Length: 411
Image (tube, rainbow, N blue to C red; front, side, top):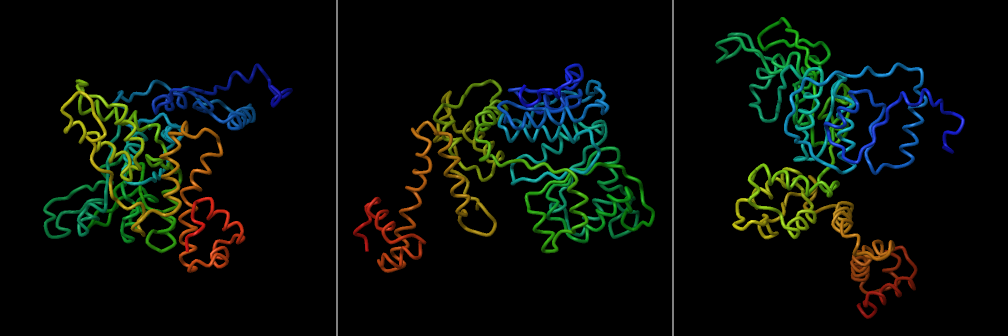
């Protein structure tokens, strides 16, 4: 009331609909947006965010309201994109916003996070839902046959081309083409793909007449396209053509609260009769892991546990060992930032163990400082003045910290 006193026309204000829910799902977000909601918020939401949304609603007075959409003709399907975390609610919101807009979408995220599910959802809730959905993974194709697979070929255009054939891009006409691992596409193929996107015309191998194909492109990658553009491995013009609307799906470690929901979902798919269930200890084990393979690794772990469990309850020992996949492409060990993030993710869910707000900070210092002090002293051959200089602190401060950790006599 204080924020908007004197500026609200009550008769007009109630014509704007703001959707607020504590039980958001992809279907809820889609229905809210398609039925004319100005904005879709999930609880708990930031008060400043709500104020900003209301201000934008007020500023839009006089603009035509979105026409209320008719009931979707899409048949209800199994909900595959699951999550109650704020980051997944944001993903649902973005899908709802872009589904009806016929523009390219770039989906980014680590391997195993569910990028193809997002692409399928965009198609399912778009105006092209009655058309074909064609998944394309160029890196999985035979290099010599990529162009033929994508663009088709004419009869006799090469050895083995005994008949004319339409390619995948022609097959996607009036529908959606999903390009997985777009970052691994060869530059020569990128050039031809860009031309198809610009002209909506596909020229088959061996032909000289283009064939119209009106498809929507959704591309996905787990690579840093901006970095690839800088190195010349990815065309800048194609990047901008793809990056019209971007959806980044978070890794599983950034949405730990979704793990029980996902785990039970995978459990029910493999055991529809509910003959086994996850114990509390099993759930704690699942939420304590880093999940380098993301949702795909979680699903495999749950399926493995169902297979080996002989009682009615799954316990931690039923899960396979955590994945040893490297945390980043350029190192055999996690970076310091990744290590701190993993420490935080593991301990944040057990925040009740910290009696005071300052305990979290002190706890991580207690883990890090002794390692720094020990190695600084070692590299300076026990010379405290030199060690203090390397650490960028006063000698007396170093002395106090050594005493604190029982390292005062260490040489």
